[in-house]
Image (cartoon, rainbow, N blue to C red; front, side):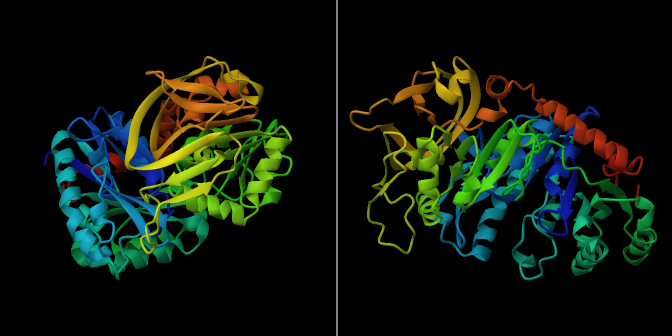
Amino acid sequence: MSAKAVMVLGTTSGAGKSWLATALCRWYARQGLKVAPFKAQNMSNNARVVPGLNGRLGEIGSAQYFQALAARARPEVRMNPVLLKPERDTASQVVVLGEVRPDLHQVPWRQRSEQLWPFARDALQALMVENDVVVIEGAGSPAEINLHHSDYVNMRTALAAQAACLLVTDIDRGGAFAHLFGTHQLLPPHERALIRGYVLNRFRGDAALLAPGPEQLQALTGVPTVAVLPMWRGHGLPEEDGVFDDNATGPGTAQAIKRIAIVAYPRISNLDEFQPLRAAPGVRLIWARHPADLVGVDWVILPGSKHTTSDLVWLRSQGLDAAIQGHAAAGGAVLGVCGGLQMLGQALIDAEAVEADPTSTGAPTSNPGLNLLPLVTTFERDKLLLETRATFGQATHAWSGLSGTQVQGYEIHHGRTVAAPNPSGLREILHNAQGEPLGWQQGNVLGIYLHGLFESPTAMQALFGLQTPSLDTVFDGLADFINQHFAPGTLMNLLKSPHA
């Protein structure tokens, strides 16, 4: 292995590992180094389509996709060799090197980890040979002592790469010094030796008030605090998992020109594509879980779903079906993306029991949709993965600005959707380069299979008249931020032996 590895560990989930790893990717790339990101295993329903093995396409977690772009590298499946996509509270789809592995779905957690580690190890070794620096992201905490012997995402990976590790904690939550000390002490001595610095993330206030905490922590553990990162909500990078927050967001919240509600069902997926809306001036973004959340909004968006039929059941149980239908009947705009598109149709047919609960009979099912578009979706066992360039036809109503707009995005879905017999008023409105339909419109209701609409500068200009910052601008801002707040020389010293 020729590369040097820098790894970002966290005291908890949500400590800031993903965005810090992304910032490091861009920082090292700006030093003229060849950089690649890596995360042995990610658990997320936010995924991107990337080049896979043997000329096929695969999928990886969105965090590693953005980290690759920050590193100025082509995203590919080795950067996130194992992706777990939760379908229920107790079950996840297992994706290995970009491809779904049904044979591993029911394998117990600890046994499955031992089967997955060789794939992760080999991918890591290949990236270490091909690059100057590999920036590695851990998962959760490395000190989960009940899982430590089977955890290959954190310290087993760190040892394999002999990585210089940063341990980051969210000081805004409180207890940061205890989190850092406890995590350090729960690791075996040979693993502690890899930790080169502590990072206090999301600090608000005067950094001088931290003294003598960092000095005392270094006296106890021998590890210095190498950065105090101020709270920064507007960095522009999508959150890795979950709904961004529970409050209305956007610079224009107070005087919103567009109020947009995104339905936040339990298995919501690919949320990162809505980051541009979150940051758009004049847009108020609302996460809808109850009918009252839709009162007074301009748009309702039904996003992607990892389990469309169960999320549709949840939507009905909340009374959101009638609220969405009422919004559309009153002339309000409705957009369905991927799973959301499928929900807008007349029926969802699962003849192959693709979305069936393993404890069920597995019998074919047919579920009614919201009947806002005359479409029928049939689930197929093989998942469609595509990088897609598509063009809007003559759009009308709320979507008229999209007419003629070309957008680039991606598709990840099992369903195949066609028009119902004798559809009244339905128009094919979005087509790929082969002329195949990817979107349908009827009145103010639009459904599309393409993910990434709002990541298109042309689409944001067409819909909102906005010039949105490029991803490169976001990545450079992250690199500037850590360059300012890390102790001078720290980041390059991480590439050197601790005894040099």
